[in-house]
Amino acid sequence: MTTLDLTGLATRPSQVWGAVRLVPLVRADPVDDLRLRSQLYGDATGLVEAGPRHAYISYIPHGFVATWTGDGTPAAAYGTHMSANGTSAPATMGLRFHRGMARRQAKDRLRFLPLHLALEGYLALHFGGPSTAWEEWSQRAIRQGLSPRVEEAYVGAEVRGLAEALRIFEIHPGQCGVLVYVADALAAAFVVPHPDDYRALHPTLLQDLYGELIHHYATLMPPVPDFRARIPDERVRSLADLRGAVAEQEHAWTHFHDSAMAAGLLDHEYAWQTVHRLGRFTLSRFLPPFRPKEENHIGEAITDDRGRIAYLKTFRLSENQVRRGHLLSRLAANDWHLAHTAADLGVDEAQLGLRLESAGFASLLRQDVLDGYRKQARNRGVSRG
Image (cartoon, rainbow, N blue to C red):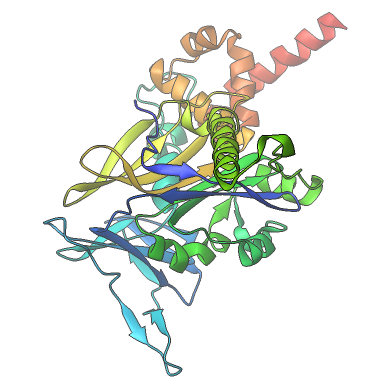
């Protein structure tokens, strides 16, 4: 397990619109030998073929196409064409069937579905169900595991204020990414290799998925304050003094942001899974340790041969999603033995069974076993009353 390494990316002062705060990420040295472009799909609902006998229906607004070179020379953003008015735009094509999360289109080109890599990793978490057929588990759990598995999210266009923020905010020179906050809760991180990629992909944040918590915060929370720099007049006697004071304020903001606001993303370790090799780059997805009542993010990344982030996209889990991930992880760690898992969690077996029910996993338990847990809970309530 390792943390996210954002070496080479620097934060710039945030910009605020209502409850939305955008924090730009800039690179002094862009990644020239890996480029990303967007591939738009006319029908946002698609059938993803995850394997020979496995498929699911999902929201697929766009894909990313990564192009790289093998010798470190600059790569072009493949697929640009000239429009009738003389401006350039990415080529697009309509697709309804999508075979796999990441699919090679050419020797040096890979198409993948942004966020779907990360979400598939979460949905596939212990998808096979109980590894041992303990007597408490239902026949359905033994035969089908956790199929079907369903999670809900909101498209960015439904997050109040996000469209306006993306439209009016300034894109900084050298900007290669952004951290999106809603009511100062970190909603998503987005990083690309090159400033030209970011300018082209900036609008796709509206087509991405955001969790339930973020949607509620955007709807219900008041505007957040803007962090404005204040430089005392008596300290400035020359342009050099002004430059020094500005640099000091930028450093203070960067330290505050990285150590406080982004700590829930950057200060924790993640379990990484390699998905594809792209020359000297590696496409991976990662899962958090599922800490209840804390900030948890899933995501996907392309890292270079030194482990530095070239591409990053994250999704913040809701508390219910964290609880489901935590329960599944603890069950798997205890070989799906309910009594041992209950002891690990500091509860009795009936309480664990009711937790599984409230998390949406009631079908995994035999009906008579679940009824027994409910009866124990009722009797416990009567005795206390």
